[in-house]
Amino acid sequence: MPRIRKSLAWLSTAVVVSVSATATAQTVDWQTYGSDLAASKYVPLEQINASNVNELQIAWSWETPDNELFRQHDNASAGEYKSTPIMIDDTLYVSTSLGQVAAIDAVSGEQRWVFDTGSWQRGRHPNFNNNHRGVAWWDDGIDGRILMAANDGLLWSINARTGQPDAAFGENGVVDLKLGLGRETRIGLYGAISPPTVINDIIVVGSSISDGPLFQDQLPPGHVRGFDARTGEQRWIFHTIPQGEEAGAETWENGAWRTAGATNVWTTMSADPETGYVYLPTSTPNNDWYGAHRLGDNLYAESLVCLDSATGEVVWHFQTVRHGLWDYDLPAAPNLLDININGEIIKAVAQVSKQGFVFVFDRITGEPVWPIEDRAVPQSNVPGERSSPTQPFPSKPPPFEPQGISDATLIDFTPELREQALALIADVDYGPLYTPPSERGVIIFPGYSGGATWTGAATDPETGVMYVPSFSAPRFVRLRKPESGESDFGYIRDRSFDISGPQGLPLIKPPYARITAIDLNRGEHLWMVPHGEGIRQRLINMGIEDPGPVGSFGRNGPLLTKSLLFVAQLDGSRPLIRSYDKQSGAVLSELDLPLPPMGTPMSYMVNGKQFIVMAIGAGPDTRLIGLSLP
Image 1 (cartoon, rainbow, N blue to C red):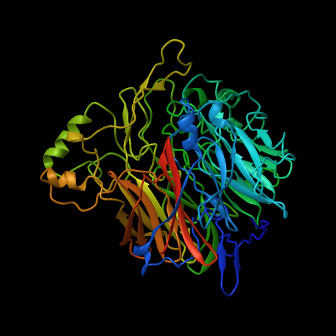
Image 2: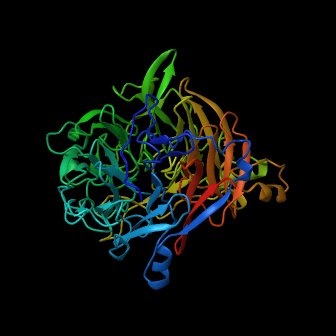
Image 3: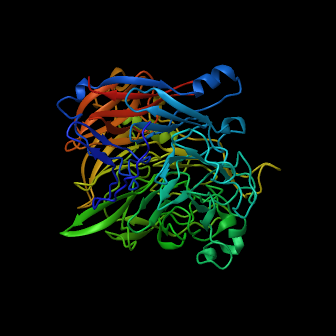
C-alpha cells in the first residue's frame, strides 16, 4: 500500500476533496463520513451520469468479519449495518457493528487488515443493539491514523498502514472516554456510535448516552471534548450542561445542572478548518419526556453550538428547542456551504431537524440568514411540569415535513377512513407541533425518529441546493408515574412508539417518505418527491384510486454527485438504490441489492474509475458492496 499522503484543501465552496491527477489516471478521495468536514455528502464526479447510470452493477462484495464472529459466538448480537466508509488513496477504511475496523482495497474489495476493538464482548450500545457508523482519519505526514470511537466508550487510534494501535496515543493506542466527565459512568450507559471529527490535529468527540429514564443522577452528562490527535491527551472539555458559575447554568433551575444527564452529541459534527470552528448538534436532556426536575430552557440542549476547536470555547449558539419534551435531538451534522443571498455571499451553516425545519445561519457570526420567529405553543398540564411558552420557528425555508395532527395531515383516502382515524385518536391528545406529552398520551408528529434523521442532508456547493431525505412517522407518548424502585422521576414514558391508523394503514396522508430539494440561496423548495412505492399496491387492492408512489418508511442517507442524487432504500420487501435527476427529482434508475441498505452511500474515484459503496445487511449477514460501470 502506498504511503498515505496529506493533501486536504478547504475550497471556497466549503467542500474538502483530495485529488491527484495525471493525464491517464485520477483519484478522488472521500475523507470523512460526510465526504468532507462540511458534511456535504457530495463528490465532484460524473463518470456515472444520467446517460449510463442504468448500466451500474455490483463490482465487488466484502463480507464483514462480524459474520465470522456470529458463526463462532452465540452471544454475538448486532443490529443494522449502518457504517459509511472513508477512502484515502486506494484504501477504504470502515467500522463494523461489532466494533471491528478494516482496511479494504478500494478497487477489488479485497481485505487488507482487520482490527477488533473487542467492544462487542464488553456490553451493548447504550440504546440499541450493537451498531456503528464509521471512522475518522488523521495524518501526521508520515502515516495515517484511523480513529474509532466504539460502543463501549473507548477511543482507538490505529495505524492505517499496519492495522495496529498507535502506541504513542493514550495507553497503547486507546483513550477511555468514560473518564474525565466529572461524573462516574459505565458501559451500557455511555458509549460512542458516530465517527469523531478531526480538525487541525484536534479530535472532537461526542457520545451516545442511554435514553432510559432510570434515576436523576444516574446518567452522565454529554460533555464534548477535544483530544490531541498525536498523544490522545485531552485538550479541552465543553460542558453541554453548563456547570457552576458558567453562563447558561441559570437555565437549569434549582441546581439541576448538578444531576441532569445526556445533552450529548450522539450524531456526527461538521467543521471549518479555515476558521477552526466546529459545529455541534446537541440532544435532549434526560428524561426526554418530562422535565420538572430540570425547569428552565436547559441550555445547551437541542442546540447548534459553534466552538473554537483549539480551545473548546463557545463562539455562538442557537437553541432550536427550549426545555425539550419531545426527544427532538438535532439528528445530523449541519451542512456548511456558501450561499448567494441577493448578490451577497454568505458563509452559511444549515441544520436539519426532526421537526422538519432547516435552521440557516451565518456560520461565522451565528446570525440567522432569515428571521426565526418565537411563536406560542401548547402548554403542559402534567403536575410539576413547566413547558416553554414559545418555540423558535424559521420563516425560511418552509418545513420539509408536515407538522402536527390536524385535517391537513390526517389520512383521508376516503371519508370512512378519515372518520375511523378520528375515532381511533378520540381519547388521546393531538394538535400542532410541540403539543406536549400528557397522561392521556399525545401523538407527536413528526415523531422523535424524524423528519430528518441521523443520515442528514446533502448539499451541492456549486448551486447551493440542499437535498433532504426524510420520513413521516407519528409517535405516541403516554406519561405515567414510575413504580417503586423503577425511577425517581415524577413521570416516565410508557413503552409505546407509534399509533396505527384505520385498518392498519398509517394515521396520516402520504408521502410516508420523501426527498425535498431546497434552494438555500432563496430559502425555497424546488421539488419534493415520494421516496419509494410503499403501500401503493395495497391501497389499490383496497379499492382506493391509485395514489402513485407513497413512500416507504426508512432512514436512508443521500449521496450527491455532479449530476445525480443517490438514495438507497428497502421499499417494502425490495432492497434497491435509486438515482434521481438533481434538477427535477425524476427517477433515472433503480438497481436491486442483495440485502437491505442501511448505511449512507459514498463515492470515489481510483485510477480513473468511479465507485459507489454502501453497507447492507444486519446482524449475522453484513457486507459492503462496490458499484461501478461495466
